[in-house]
Amino acid sequence: MRTLLQGVDTVISCDPNDRVYRNADVWFCDGKIEGIGTFAGNADKTFDCRGMILYPGFVNTHHHLYQYFTRSLERVQGMELFDWLRTLYEIWKNLNEDTVYLSSLAAMGELMRYGCTTCFDHHYVFPKGAGDLIARQMAAADELGIRFVASRGSMDLSKKDGGLPPDSVVQTIDEILADSQRLIERYHHPEKDHMHDIVLAPCSPFSVSGDLMRESAKLARAYGVRLHTHVGETRDEENYTLSRFGMRPVAYMESLGWLGEDVWYAHGIHMNDGELDQLAATGTGVAHCPCSNMKLHSGVCRVPDMLRRGVKVGLAVDGSASNDGSNMMNEIRTAYLLHRLTWGEQAPSGYELLKMATAGSAALLGREDIGSLETGKQADCFLIRREQPDLLCAELDEKDLFGNVGYHKPCDLVFVNGQLTVEGGRLMNVNEERLYRDGKREVARLLG
View: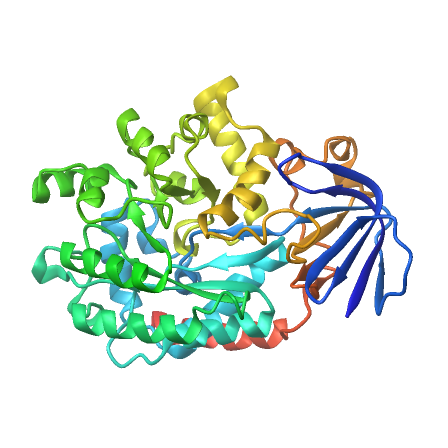
């Protein structure tokens, strides 16, 4: 099928040459970008895109979709990470397939309405008897039409072992590895299916054992899948690894085989110069989560220092309950202001943060086929209408728009794999009213 985006006012490619196209036609064919420019030919479907700005779809590199149903709870406001987690685990231990399916639909639906076309989720809470939670996430992603990378997260240290979670949500290493292998064999077929993938992602140094980290890394590398975990998020974590293992978090990760091109960490806030050099030298990446880091008083990630060293950095919204939204446009604006406040002239520009949310995030996931608008890449993109009062003067600098000024409306059009998934700010494949009713009922059950 050939699709034509006709007469696009401005195309922000985010390619390695930072090309910007004016008054261009964009052709999709069989889910990929066939060309950008002026072309003759017949299209099966044509969209009039005059007066619109086209961007590559955002790639979210760290989320906890299930947390969408525990947002803005009064009892946890003002808490920092460890107390926040201890309190919410008592709710999360009641997750089931319905909770995970509906929260994934709602959270990824919000992401997609605001331009996100690929979502990575870090799911690590598996209550006993809860069902096949990853399968329900995949079903939600397929229904929405979003590109989805799931993780088989894990925890094997409960309160009785010195960890944070209750016994009912931790598993044995053998259980975790067996299910990890099952999910890899079911979903990790990148040469056949670019819409799904799987990652192995033990939760964090304070909720998993060293043995689980080592064995997960061995299994992942045997199958060629990537690795993800939380590292360097808080001082409490740093104190935990120092007291338990006599090492700072990055040194502890190194001792477990958790550095390399196939690894990326969530947060990476509390790292010294030597550790940043180590990340750069090994190709280990970082998912930057500015809203979550601010809300939980975790600290400010050293993004300018990372970029200067060549550390791979992507952008992410983190769990909804620590944000409390799923909006990559808002994440760019927040990151821009946070780093201007902290670093002044050294702060990344709005365009650098846009590239972090697209090409930079794609690199963390090991994807060379998304993250920019180039011939042969996946047709994942979104458009916003420039001819509106909200963008007066701001539209003169389309590359820096999301950082400098911000944009606060859903997209006019979103395409994933060449398919239209959002039009006029509405999800094309999901009944939003029914999702609200079903979600509200499930929230009441979970919180009750």
